[in-house]
Amino acid sequence: MSSVVRLVAGMLLCAALAPQADAAASKKQPPYFGSIAAGRARMRTGPARTYPASWLYQRADLPIRVVAVFKEWRRVEDPDGTQGWMQANLLSERRTAVVRSPQPIPMLDRPTPGGHVMWRAAPGVVGRISECGNGWCRMDVKGQAGFVETSGLWGVDAGETLP
Image (tube, rainbow, N blue to C red; front, top):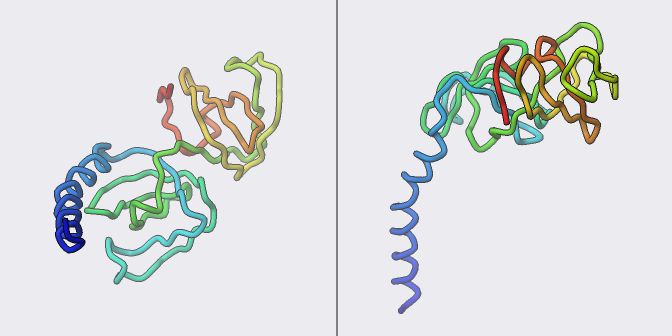
């Protein structure tokens, strides 16, 4: 098989698979939480690179809420309520949360108010969350993990359950 034939066959295969990959990537229906995957990510005023950037985020893992989808663009909301458009490849479905309480929140050894305090997370700290239920989530901040009440976090809905 000549290299030209292989090239054309490869291009046709990619073209045939692209719509399936795009459909799989947009299965999740907004609104849903995710996070910024890139160390530098621009929020734009519209869903194309031709629109001006309104913000430059330099904090990977910052939680965002996806509120709309347009092709490879996502309209997102940040923890301060700012909304704009970001390319989907700059985002992740990894769940994170930011401490929104004005005071440090305790990170406990178990999801009960009587748990032993393992760590404290200051306002603005971002961590990865898992095992959410009954108003508690397990939060990991660079290897320091514990259970926190969801009322002090932005990035998880009240009553939300995560495995």
